[in-house]
Image (cartoon, rainbow, N blue to C red; front, side, top):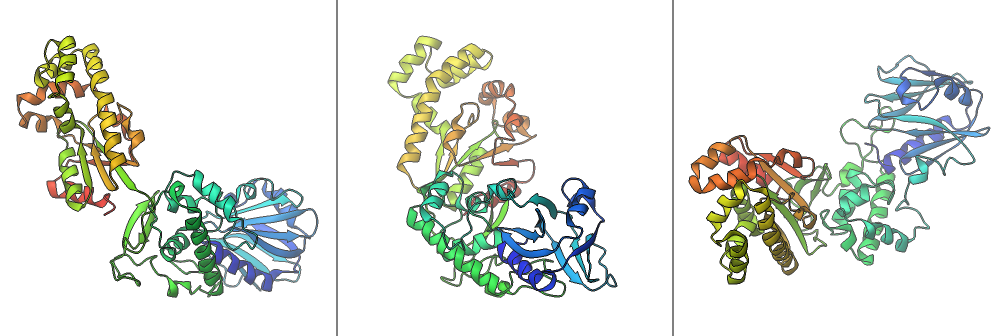
Length: 454
């Protein structure tokens, strides 16, 4: 997708080719490109002269004679192509502008994600979409304290926060990766834990990256070209974007690519420091789907691990807790209590009222006293509302669950009775990651490694 440097390059090219020209007619070939009534759009442009072309973030602003302006967004692959005739018309032509001097301006868009609209001159900056646009890193009057305040409010990663155009405008996937690499800050860092100096450092490098990219007419990746037959050249100066598996220029460490907020993100795990004390992954799912295997896999990768089941076993050995359990169940033995509660929801609730607060406190203590990457296995993570303590969550499911339970023997039957009424599929939308453990052990382990971030 064209980002600020690409859009600025397009703006400068259009100034040279169409500024001062007067629209004669407009032909809309693909109506979804144009906002609102088509005829109203055409009428707003007819006989209007292009006085200037400006830009705000990724939006182009065609300042016209009269009371209105035309706004444009290139979407994924939109292109404004000036010309003298339709002799070499593209099959992706969506809107055709003709000028009184006989020249034309094509708006081509193979993906049809581009957008054109008419706005009143008086208030176009005060209405959507421009009213929600944040500050640009290249703005000479940028207020670092205000930007820090907005970034500090975010509990997302800094990668996701910088992609939010309402906070910092003009940065897309390429330039966020490049900025964070140069600022030596991990894209996984929590935005609200960054210092003011971190934010100032990010803004400085974002400005440097954007200015350099503008100087080289943007970055050409995939099929984007800023004008017919012209490509940007900033890709020659990329440090991390598109370089997964290659050595870091600074330290030689292999660059890794992960997904953050659904966006591919490449960075150096050594040079880019994680500006947070910890990353906490909660693991959950029904009985015998592979939670312990996932936990052990992460442990081998370098995670500090925690098993709620192991902690609960210790609670059953605590004399004070044993006395409390005996009052309610006439026994303090774990397996006997499981049999009692497996078909008695009221008794199960009483057991949870005793154990859940203890587990919650123990988990919080574990999180508070450790740094780095933490993996916490809790069978009833969502049911007990423990997911709020986690940065991300992994839900493991398997249609082989019943056979796996049977393989564990009679002791597992009570636990199966407890869990069979719980619909873990209900929590798919709440979980950050969902892995179906229906394949081989190696396939499952590889799936866990893929989301491990290490």
